[in-house]
Amino acid sequence: MLKSKLLEFMSHMDQKQLQRFGEFLASPYFVKDDKLYLFFQAIRKYAPEFDSAKLEKSAFVKKGVEGLHLDEKKLSYLMSDLTEAGERFLKAELLMQKDLEGYCALLSTYNDWESDKLYEQTLRKARKHLEESQYRNPDFFYQQYLLQSELNAYFDRQKKRALDMSLQQAANYLDLYYLSVKLRYSCELINRQKLVAADYDLRMLREVRSHIEEHDYTEFPSIMIYYRVLMTFLENDDTGHFDSLKALLAEHANAFPPEEARDLYAYAQNYCIRKANAGKESFLRELLQLYQASIEEGLVLTDGHISPWSYKNIVSVATRVQETDWAEQFAKQYKKHLHEKFRNNAFNYNMAYLLFARKQFGKALTALLQVEFTDVFYALDSRTLQIKIYFELEETDALMSALEAFKVYLRRNRTISDSVRTIYMNFVRFVNRILSVPPSDSEKKQKLHEKILEAGNVADIRWLLQKTA
Image (tube, rainbow, N blue to C red; front, side):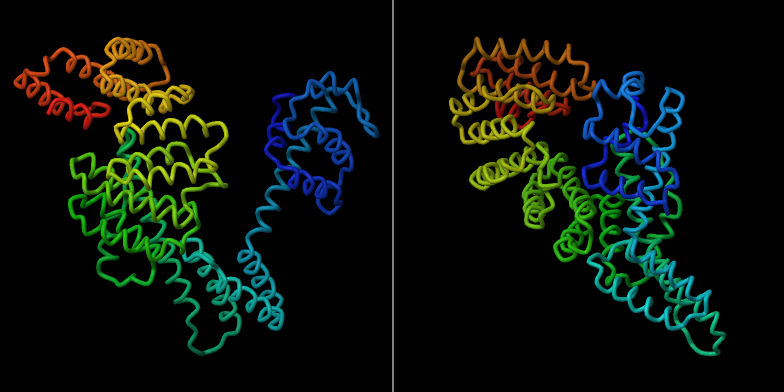
């Protein structure tokens, strides 16, 4: 059974889900074959990894299960049936989480039964559920559309010659759902085009954009925020779109689930990064403010953890705008939120980065020497920081050794993409070129400065340009 679909399926369940799955299997309403419950109980004891050698087919058959007559063929049938039952269990669990859809199914049934009393009671519950909904995102619009559709079906059955707005409301909410989802997908498609070599077909985008510009959707943040994100892509030079996006996020971020709000902040942050990379360094301050806002909203944590890359980016940006005290406070405060696997490396690297920015090179080196090069991106930045520290300390022998070791690392590491390898190889090449230029030769330094600018794709280009200024 090892490496089977069944054990793969069960290994993703926590103890609570396994308990409920067992209850599902024990219910004759859901499962008629009681052998599946006995089989499940025999397997469950190997949770959560389900990797014991006792789960190998021949070993499991040999040991047997009380109440079951097993051979390898029967075991295969049981595995298949239990997997199928597990998928039915998951579908039932997911459906039970969709309260509004459940209310709509009841409304449809009560309408068919022509039971107005049951219908009205359920309608009150459905409306209260929507009123209490925390978010005003596309899912909310879709649920409103479903409810208004049921109201329209109920009105049709009544055959009353009277004004009823349910059909109009259903159409309106469907429009809101379509517009917000269309904008969200369009933003993501454009974003992906910038990351990978792909040419997506952005249909009806011009029409959607014109429609929004001709109508007032200011009371619907999920439309206006995604519209502003879209415009930061389409009209990158018009910073007014970014200003509007930033204001909308500050006011309405809590109208979205955390994962969606996090993505919206990421769009704004990436705009600032693009601007900063294009030479507009004032956007680094804007970027830090967005990071700080997302921290206040609790969006930097996912399941109680901050990613080591977000942690590093926040410290880096704060340091670049001379907010080193804030950066240090953040690094220390959020250290406990780093996953244990990354915690010490991430903290020590970022403290070394801060100490380097404060020109405390000896202390920076001490902190950096505690970093283990386990993650490739932390390894790359740690090596470049080490080289910069040796350069500033004028430790020539250690510097030359570090440069050579970094070259070897870049050539041999197959997990590094060619584009990333080029960026760091250029850094090594230009450090060597700087070392070959006499400090007093301002003409050669100027030429090298211009070559670094022309090259563009260079790690730590700001530091290199400072050294050749």
